[in-house]
View 1 (cartoon, rainbow, N blue to C red):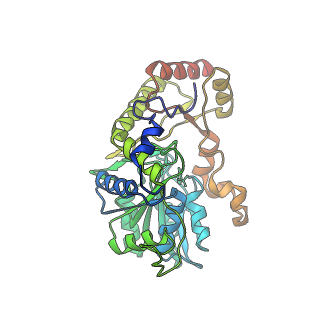
View 2: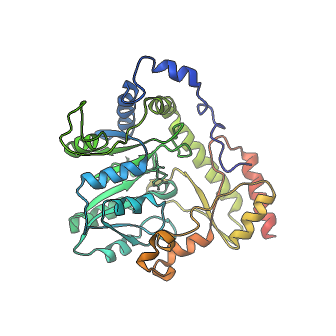
View 3: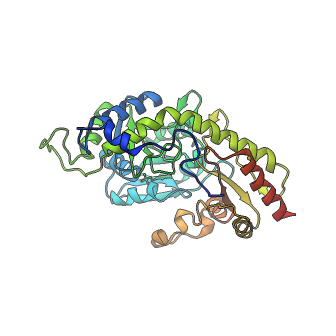
Length: 363
Ligand SMILES: *Cc1c(COP(=O)(O)O)cnc(C)c1O
């Protein structure tokens, strides 16, 4: 069984010839479908503006740049995440300051965020990791109290919700990824920025297109990060299925949780109160994790480790001279988490097989 099958669920396999026909006559870059996707996605999220970009890493970078993050600034970001939420801070010549994550939810620990605030702190990046909502309401309060910007990394959290609002609508701006394996995936790289701040939206839209809204209207320098017309067409065709695919992920997670509940060597995911977890990743905390993974591989079950190293423990950040003990939760997650297949289209029989194999391993 593969870790992910991108074409297992109805609606995932699109006819490329028909897609090309559907954009017929339009430019491959800056075609009409890009604007149509931007409108459709902002409508689904309930947010004013959506700026399609080349990928989510660029989206995070553009947000930080356009919010004025610069040399000497500090940005607090989770110690347990994909590297984009830290490297884009460095790309602005600012300093990523890591905060540890909650031992049950795996998203930012608000108390540790508060401890890391200094006179140079300008912003906090909340990552909704694995589809679990970060504590955005509490973080918003902390940010307002200390006059900090709040940025959301929603790369793993399409339609994750907190109360009656979607992740991505709590911060000053949020970045989404449509990398092929994400809950809403393109057929290549793609991403977007969303915000309710109209002036910021215009600046970011310019920034991602060489500082210009129209051809040759460069009132500032920027970068080249745009969503292709073809990727927009793919995403427009897939967007109507997103809620259903998320529902399947959630049901798969429920099956895993009920079938694995009595195995004492595991800690299963918990969902933060008053939120909907969209299970981009279904990660269990397992004793003897590496042996379990090897055993599952031998039985034909592919698993992945998200992530084998907490960010402060990566060679990329060795210059900070952190010790694993500085981030005890993140450092234990790197040794214990194992991600099981969760994709829409996975069958109950598949899930039962994975669970039975895990049970046999521990027996
Ligand atoms: C995938 C991912 C990104 C990067 O997205 P790209 O579109 O590949 O740049 C950023 N943050 C998180 C949490 C991710 O999972």
